[in-house]
Image 1 (spheres, rainbow, N blue to C red):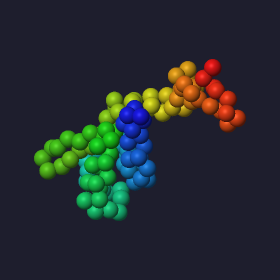
Image 2: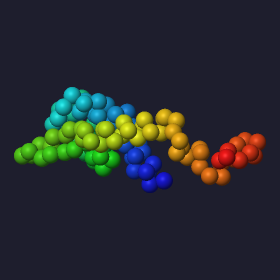
Image 3: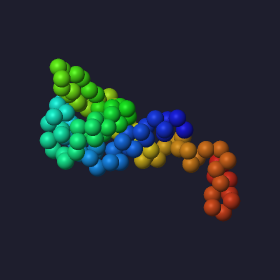
Image 4: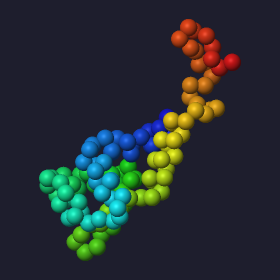
Length: 112
């Protein structure tokens, strides 16, 4: 269960269209918060909230330079997310549906 909890944080963060758009913008490279803010009708505090959630799930990194914050995607987190999505959408021998005591709709044991 921990495996799923850890990996689904990214999808929860991306559940907001504006956060998904921010990630899309960052796919072009590092960007200052001021440039991100120019694309949206939101306050600085709302943007900060969105960026906090994207950083907490690991997708986005931040660095301070003077009074500005620059954001970029975390390539390692992106790769991990791609691997997770591939893992849960691909048939495999150790799938949770094949666990011991798996019963089909008619009550037959599927673990045999």
